[in-house]
Amino acid sequence: MRAPEHKGCRLLVALALLTAIAGHARGIVRRRRGFGDGGQEYGYVDVRDGAHMFYWLYYVNGGDTPADKPLVLWLQGGPGASSTSFGNFEEIGPLDSNLNARNATWVKYVNVMFVDNPVGTGFSYVDSTSKLTTNNKQIASDLVELTRGFLKRHPQFRNIPVYVFSESYGGKMAAEFALNLFKEKKAGTIDVNIQGVALGDAWISPVDTVLSWANYLLQTGMVDTEGYKAVDRVAQQTQRAVLRGQHAQATLLWSQTELTISRVTQGVSFYNILDRMPTKAHARADNSTDFLFRVMSERIAPDERLDALMNMRVKPALGVVPERVRFRTTSAQVFNALYADFMKPVTHIVERLLSETDLKVVVFNGQLDLIVSTPGTLAWAERLKWRMGEYWVTKAPRRALAVDGILEGFVKSAGKFSFYWINRAGHMVPADNPAASIEMLRQVTEFDKREITTE
Image (tube, rainbow, N blue to C red; front, side):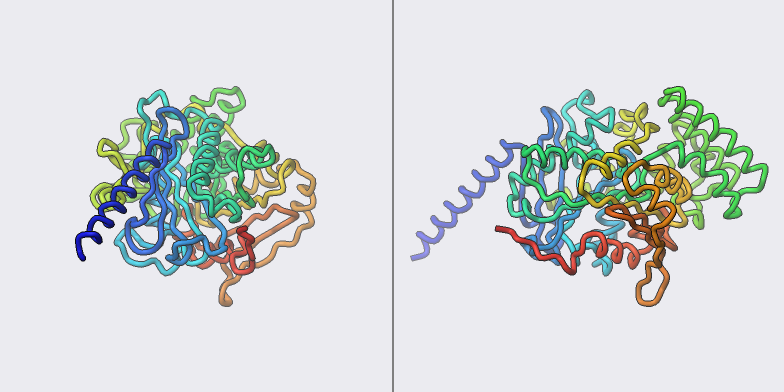
């Protein structure tokens, strides 16, 4: 009586293999076992010929269905920093980089999908360097195709409210992605329930950020008057390059401004002014172009632990990443491909989100962040042109953001726009202040109130 059971098992295995092969032929691969506990989905979407984007989703609270909870798409910055490693293991995923359970994981409250974006980042890969993206428009288009492919493979998410959360350069990508996704939905080309976008310490108006640095450092006691003058001098040169449309030159000058800051502050961390950079990048960099990438790399992966974790533990467990793809938490190749686009603003995209869509638009910023300082973010936010812009600036009430009686920040809202000031946080807000981040997540997504119809 045992032989028929074994034949049945072999048949099921064969069918499963055929299903997996068929999925790969469509450009999407999925396996459910994953890495660590809890229900997961992951795989590739071929967003263009020769461009393969990787996603990794965790079902809410370790289940195996969306459970009528919102879906958060998380986009990391850089450009070229991996969401599936840093955002996942260092910020909001269910495990930390030591593989201990994270108490403040967002997966307790919502479904979370990390995307390695742009292609060439993390486990995402391209067949040739000509397939790397060189501008924000291409990035947004690829993300729409990623979403289209994901929903085709996982239709159970079509009616689930989707919120795009982002950090740093990820905010620049998220803004245009959310706008394009909304437009595609309205045109009827994609069945997605996009509800909002959140721009965290976001690289929306680079020149506003750069111009804020000298004052911010002076007011926080990080430089004296001479240090202020040195930083402001190069910042003004950066602005002039942007105004002339010399964006590649502006990126170089941006990096020179950072190099100046590092020298006059003796290595203050760009990601939290109460810290110093892990090593003296300003002393080791051959030039300012080398320095700008070292700054990002040393904060994201200072000791290469994440690279080792992803290559030696995660990659074999997932079983879908091509052998030739070697994971790096930060990609210089991706960064360099976007070098000329880096200093271009997308404030006009945020204005279109407010004027042409019904999406929630959220901006949040850490109090101790330097690389995207709150004063710089507030400068462009207060200039936004939209129906309630003047009211938001001059009349909207600013409320305390408190958790368990502790003042975690402030929030100011008008219509569908909200700005969150987050206390005791630098650039990586969820890692630095989990309580404030989760309260913001609750207010934005209403994960504790929403009833979703999935029929």
